[in-house]
Image 1 (cartoon, rainbow, N blue to C red):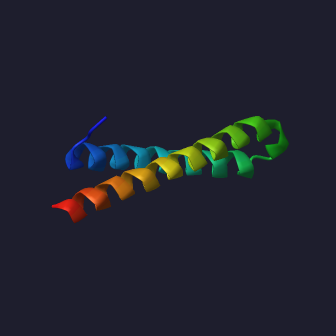
Image 2: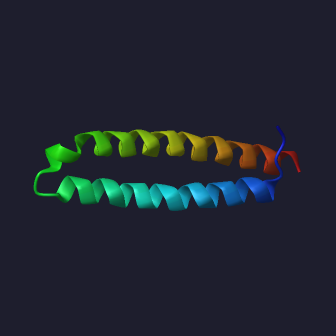
Length: 70
């Protein structure tokens, strides 16, 4: 699938926003009095953060490649 730069930039912006919210969620759960009760939610959020970070890196690489070609 081919995407233009504006689509990649917007996708990255949306993912960055979601990453920010996920990181705040992890902080909130970890700060709870009985954080062990939220272990599965914390693990899930951390795994999603990692997946989104990979996505951002790949999008940034695509943007860089596109800019190098033009």
